[in-house]
Amino acid sequence: MGGRSSTASGKTTVDVAITGVTGAGKSSLVNALRDLSDFDDKSAETDVIEGTKEPTAYPHPNFPDVIIWDLPGIGTPNFKAVEYLERVNYSQYDFFIIVASNRFTAYDTQLSHEIQKMKKRFCYVRSKMDIAITNEKLNPDFNEEATLQKIRKYCLDNLVEAGIASPLSQVYLVSSLYREKYDFHLLQRILEDEIEALRRRLLKPAVLPDSEKERDDKSTKPSAGNRALSICLPKVFKVGLAKLRDALLQRNLDEVSEEIRQELDKLQNVKLDIAITGVSGAGKSSLVNALRGMTDYEEGAAEVGITQTTMECHAYPHPLFPKVTLWDLPGIGTPEFKPKDYLEKVCFSQYDFFMIVTSERFTENDVLLAHEIMKMKKKFYFVRSKMDVSIAAESRKPDFSMDKSVEKIRKYCCDHLTKIGESNPRVFLISRRDLNMFDFPDLQEALENDLDDLKRQALILALPVFSRRILEKKKAAMEALIWKFALVSCALGAVPVPGLSAVCDLGLLVGGLILFYKVFGLDEESLRRVAKVVGKDYQVLKSAIKKSPMSSKITPKLVGSLLTRSLFYATLSVIEVALYFVPVLGSLAGGVSSFVTVFFMLKSFLKDIVEDADNVRAKAAEP
Image 1 (cartoon, rainbow, N blue to C red):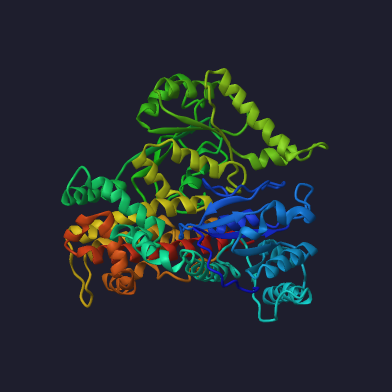
Image 2: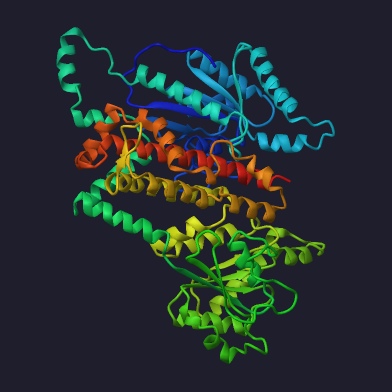
């Protein structure tokens, strides 16, 4: 990192610039630093072509007065090096992260020298480390630690040779895709330290003449409420307080607490019935197993075979959320289930939602099913299965193009659905062999979006963690519950916790933490199931869990120890914020300090669970 300016500026924001060559992964790093995936709402846009055409501002998730700027890449026809600094207004930023994904370039030297000239500081980040390591694995002498050291030394040597840094400077190796690996978390901590220092130094009022100091002191001294609002706290805490405040506008604290308790009960007991229908042999039973996060051959899985196996409607409850039921219906159009009898035989009207599955041509039976569902004013998706088989067949053509083949199949299905009167056909192409290919993640997301709030929440909790996008959705769903768990535990059935000043319902919190495990698939049963699905040893996946105890260890005693660690959050300033937003919290049985302690205990636990779930997902995806 370079030098530091010591001049107070009177600025209202701290501006952090992410800069470097085009295609280095700057926008993905912006998203990672904001705790977003590349596909979340309000994430920085990423693309395989030049995407960032102008400096774009994004708020920091934890510091409302900090802006992260995604700058265009230097050295493109649109942003030539000779005019880059002026065009992106380089001097306006307070701290820089220079991102490179391949070789050290003259552009890195130019940017670093300019930052040093301004007496400002920067970090040098080598991105896309997952790709670099994957490529290096082809080397017969591959050693991961030696490779990391080689890349780190290469970057540092070039910085030193360019006269930019001393050998003590830190180079950060990161992967925005696998944030738990390499130096990403260290980079986060360093950046937050720099931000704190810059906020203290830059965000104080500019020095005034002596005659104006007294007047300024009086006019700028914050009230208790404004002082509380200015305290920097996680967004999820403030959002939870705001929602609680809104709920209390209509009802008293006891009524809100009881209503939330009932909602939490309903969430774990809401019924959701999804019917998987279509022609025989289309892969319906395999889809049922995939949606339950199971292999086709483990105990409790829907039976699959090369001959007709499903002879009656089978209900398959989700292994961890038994109120979410997938119904494997017999195939339509067989001698046993002729079209004219099918609807009545399978009790077609009893289901909440439908998926019509086909693996080849669009048939008149598909038309019949779609018409009947539309008549009931219910929703359905059309799932084109066995895409791996179709693409393998297409690939034998001399002019084969994967994209063209996929688009041809999708258009074929959409055109036929449009002809029968479906104005907005929902077609999903999937392969059971590789659920991350084609549209399976989109199918999960679409199903979630089309359900009502309570059933949507139930589905999100039950979905297996196939992708980071699903992981992020589960995290958001659980964050929305944290303040509710905290309120209910401190309001209903709260008792003093031995050895602590906190008063809460330990039993309810034990149940909450176990729910976290099930939602993210980290309980022993889920881990064993995932191990079977991906063909890995259970102990290998278990070894990826670094921060959380196993779910069988969740006891009142453990919860008490976790609360002890969270007590330091219940500071006077944090309590002041809580009481400013929701004054009635002071009447909780456990008091506002207990609410704050429980809230931050759950938030910290969730953070660890999400990190471990991402580690397990990455370990499961390794070849």
